[in-house]
Length: 382
Ligand SMILES: Cc1cc2nc3c(=O)[nH]c(=O)nc-3n(C[C@H](O)[C@H](O)[C@H](O)COP(=O)(O)OP(=O)(O)OC[C@H]3O[C@@H](n4cnc5c(N)ncnc54)[C@H](O)[C@@H]3O)c2cc1C
Image (tube, rainbow, N blue to C red; front, side):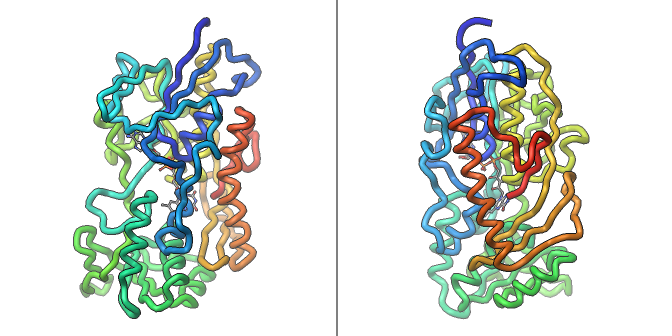
C-alpha cells in the first residue's frame, strides 16, 4: 500500500478519543502499518467531556467536566469542530452540518448517547448538566426533586444532589425500587435522606405513579437518567441499526456490508455472543474504541481483524462526599458476591475516574499502549 490512509472518527467521547489516538500506532499486532495514517476527529464540543463527572456538575459541586482537547488527544489528530449529519458510505465521505464533505478511507462512528428529546432535566452533556444545576439552584428549601432511574447514574445524581442540597427532598423512582441485593447502597441513601420509590415517572409531565397505583404530582425538578437515546446519524445515513437506533456492528465492530465503517461506544450494538453483555458505559467505551482502531489498522495492514474480547471487572459508584460503592462483576457483567462501600470505595472510584483520562492521555503519548485494566484480554471498570 502507498500514500496516506485517511481515517475519520466521528464523536470525541471516551470511545472516539481512544480510537483516534490509537489509530496512530505504528503496528497492528506484529505487522507494521504500511502507510502513514492521517486521523481527523469530528466533534462539535469545544472541550472533551468527562461525562462520568456530570452528576457533580448538576449538583453544583464541580463547575465543569470539560478538559482541553490537548489533554487527551495526540497532537497529530486533526479536530474538526462540527456536527456530522450524514455518512455517505458508498462514496466514502461524512457530511457536516455546514454542508462540507469530509472524505475518508476508513470511518469510526462513536457518537455516544444522550437524553431523549422529550426528557425533562438530564445530565448527559455539560450543557444539560448546567441546566439541571441552575434549576436545582432555584429550588427553595423543602422542595422536591425526582430522579428517574435507580441505575448507576440515577444513584450518583441522587447522592450528589442530596449531599450538595440537604435541604431538598430527593426521591429516586424506578420500576424495580432500590437496587436489589445492595444493602450498603440502601443504607447510604437512607443516611442522605434519599427515598427510593418503586414506580414510574411520566417523561413528559414528571408525574410519578407508584406501584400502589397512586399518582404523585410532578416535582419542580425531575432529572431523567434512564432510557438514553443515541444520535440518529447512523439511521439517517441508511446504515443498519437496531430498533433503538444503535449502529449494528459485527464482533470486529465492522458495519455489516460496509468494511470501511466501524463503530464503538454507547452508539453501537454488537451482534453476536461476544457483545451481548456490553452495556452503555465508559467502562465499555474505552476498550471498544481501542478495538475499533485495531480493526481499522488490521485492514490497513492487510491482516484479518480479531473478534472482540472485552469483559467487565467491576461497577464503581460515586455515592457523594467521598463515599462510594464497588461491586465486582464477572467478565460478562454478572454480579460477584463481593463489594465494598464507604470511603475506601470512594477512593477507588475517584482513582478510576482519574484513570479514564490518564488512559486517554497515555494512548495519546504512546499510541497502541492501552491494554484495559488488566490486558491482554481487557477488562473494564469505571
Ligand atoms: C452522570 C453520568 C455518570 C456516569 N458514570 C459512569 C460510570 O461511573 N461508569 C461508566 O462506565 N459509565 C458511566 N457513565 C456512562 C458513560 O459516560 C458513557 O457510557 C460514555 O460516555 C460513552 O462513551 P462514548 O464515547 O460512547 O460517548 P460520549 O462520551 O457520549 O461521547 C460522544 C461524543 O460524540 C459527539 N457527537 C454526538 N453526535 C455527533 C455528531 N453527529 N457529529 C459529531 N460528533 C457527535 C458528542 O459531542 C460527544 O463528544 C455515566 C454517564 C453519566 C451521564
